[in-house]
Length: 311
Image 1 (tube, rainbow, N blue to C red):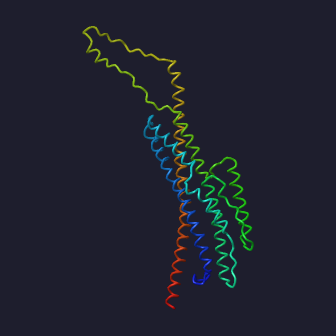
Image 2 (cartoon, rainbow, N blue to C red; image 1 turned 180 degrees about the vertical axis):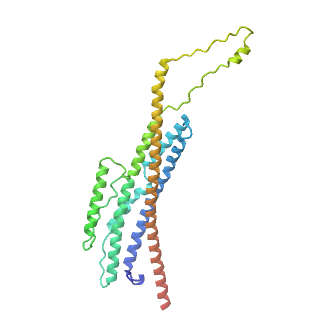
């Protein structure tokens, strides 16, 4: 249902309140987008590692293993850090919460409906952004316990949802889980396992066995001094007994490496998809805010020009 309430009839305080709150939410969107972009770009390191350790075509050399370990360490460091912009989210959220209020409107039923709509949107935006910021930072500090004014049909449902989510998030963080993004945690476990496997598998090339060209030796030897002897088959049982367990261990290690790389490949795709989805939702909110602010300012300019023409 359209309210049919032109901007020219709005109170100036309502306009100032909307512009001030919306610009703060835009800052939050920028901070969230910066962190999501950083996480997405860090996945390039994982793709590089998987490219280096592509054992389907050849056996990785010692140099390739070294480069893979360096890239894995860099990726793990990046996953344990956050964007500097994300740290500012908590301050912005606190400012929004401090100014959150249901403005009282007299002698304007449409104005009262507008303010209640603004209030509801701000409550939901504040709650959602605080949850996302907490998940990305791995800290419960950004979480907000938003207190909603009475008189809304959705009050009880919102309070139940907020209590459930905040309690679950705080409980998980207190148990030692720094990040609650399960896709990220699964990928980190695979990366740590891959790091361990690359340190434990010996991929050094076996030295070439010296070969003897009997015909060449026969030609180079003095006539009559060369006497061809039948080749003797010798088996070093001790050597075979020592090499067999090692070969089996290397084979098992390579198989585990393949399985780990497969898990990392699948996990990287899932994480990339989830990050893209979340980034798209943040961008959608950003565009909605920009469109709303632009429409409001355009209507204000049009209203101002109309008043000037009438005078």
